[in-house]
Amino acid sequence: TQLLEQSPQFLSIQEGENLTVYCNSSSVFSSLQWYRQEPGEGPVLLVTVVTGGEVKKLKRLTFQFGDARKDSSLHITAAQPGDTGLYLCAGRYGGSQGNLIFGKGTKLSVKP
Amino acid sequence: NAGVTQTPKFRILKIGQSMTLQCTQDMNHNYMYWYRQDPGMGLKLIYYSVGAGITDKGEVPNGYNVSRSTTEDFPLRLELAAPSQTSVYFCASSYSSRDGAKGTEAFFGQGTRLTVV
Image (cartoon, rainbow over all chains, first blue to last red; front, side, top):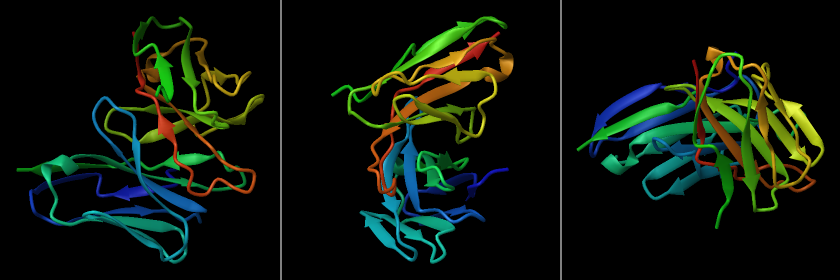
């Protein structure tokens, strides 16, 4: 059972298009994080959302945490080829603070 | 700045062999993690540790063992390698204060690509 469901799994778009990636769960998370991973590398943190309803912006990327703290979205405006990569959401849940769980990821390809 | 260092980067094992994947961090982080990532998939948590001497199982612990004798090191042991353990293994670390782990960034190593034949 996947605690964090990400959709879509794959996304191929043209440069300049907008896109949204979703991360959903039936569990409540104390925080959710978004990471980006490039081939042959480990994931690198993009943002952390902590408060229900929180919205954070990182240049062309907008992250939102659901009011109930069970879901999150990542919206990219005017995608660039440099945005290509695997986007992973991760969350901590349950009694153990060390339990950092990842979703399966969304593989994004932005074509020039 | 070294961060999280994993060795080896690549390894081929025969079925039934054993090996230890090494992981060390120089950031004085209390939390450390081991994940495996299969092709085209996200990361699955194998084991984690919230401090020296404390380890706990993650989502997929079977076939693996860990120890945490120091803050810096968190080795992952495969006792009887199986083809199902062919994967890329990532070690990560983060710092969390006693009042919670909200918002703490996990720093990852470069990964170890393991093939079991």
